[in-house]
Length: 239
Image 1 (tube, rainbow, N blue to C red):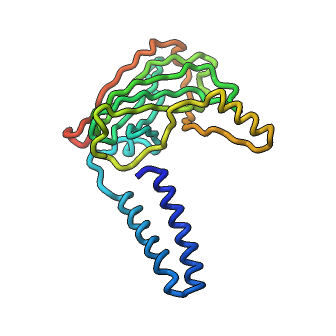
Image 2: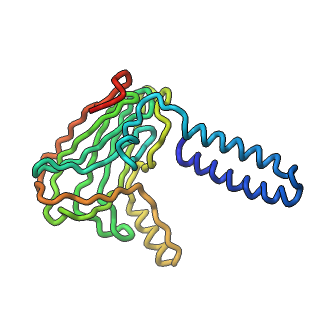
Image 3: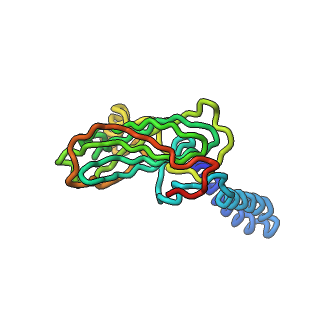
């Protein structure tokens, strides 16, 4: 069950609580029958959605408190250092039983109303993930000296498609939903004009804040490698 559905159900719960209170005041116990029945049904649905058993191990949930999702592909982004070499590591897992093709991208976010972006290149990571599989993509990346050690906030987007259809859902917990595009010049203009009109409006993007390492190479090849760490049918633990 995705977050938007859960939000709607939470709103229904609030409405039912108010309706129950007014129903009790106006009609006593009879006024609780309809809102109470609906409330019980919503609670039952939420409990079922929260505790139903996955058909594949949720490796991302086991390893990360916070991860992203786009249309069934979940992923987490981590910085990784070995000696003086830096890389981005993108762990990913497919929620459905059929293969997924995706593109994950992230870049420094703007500091204020679309301006002041850190001068680091956008990272684009193509992904191909079998049904239910869990994998890792590694991207060699150089960090200029002036950015090393800084806390940088990144905008995260992704695109995912299932050429053969999605099939059955294997994992039921969703991630933080990301959009398909970054903030555009039009978004920046709308935000600036809204502030001038004293009615601020911002285009919200999924973001990730990380501290970049120090004493690493300023340049790197940009090479991307990908490996699948687990597939359905493998033992339910990975090293």
